[in-house]
Image (tube, rainbow, N blue to C red; front, top):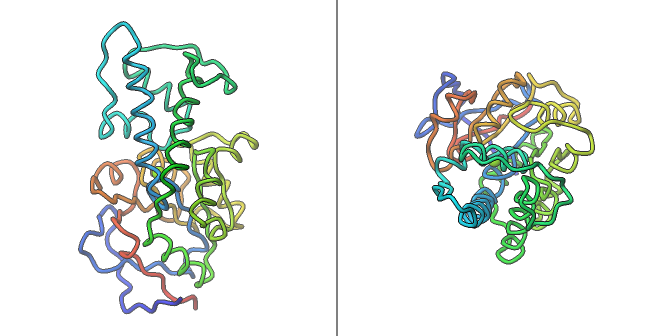
Length: 267
Ligand SMILES: [Mg+2]
């Protein structure tokens, strides 16, 4: 597949792309695209959110004091989205003034520790993807094929330890030259978002520099990481709107769908 493009417009940074002309990416300027998984490539963000809500609401209800249930629009985005699992647990609990022992990653899903609650969330998440499958954003898949056809390298990053399993389930594993996920990060001691290190590691594996790579992210912690890593371009993916939260935290521009982007031919 090869797409030819008439436009090479460069909108001012800090703008969203809604109803603008397509933004053109030049493979002469950028060697690689590095994409977040959840919410950018697959719709697992919604499944994660559902699993988090179910886990925390059950847990909050089991406590003696009464607490506000988790609100996906506010709490999930603010405290949990994009962070490594146990950091997400801790951050949300803090927001409710609850302090639990950290425990250990081996804790069973019914242990009342940060790790135990995180493991319960993971158990719920895996139950849901195995039952319902993984939903893929086709516009992203088309974009990835076009990038590869135009000699750009592709990387996927994720805080999720289920990243490989999710990509396999969706038959997308072969579309990526590198994968820095929760498993790889743990093995190599790479800190999670909002630190930029997962993106930096992906760029290194793709044999390029941050300034010649483009980051795609749908989470606040992710665009912050892209900005702090000084990537050439940080594109916020705001499929359901809410562009401001990404633009205000480090995105250079935002898109709702990948077909708002074009890739020019390599010279
Ligand atoms: Mg995401």
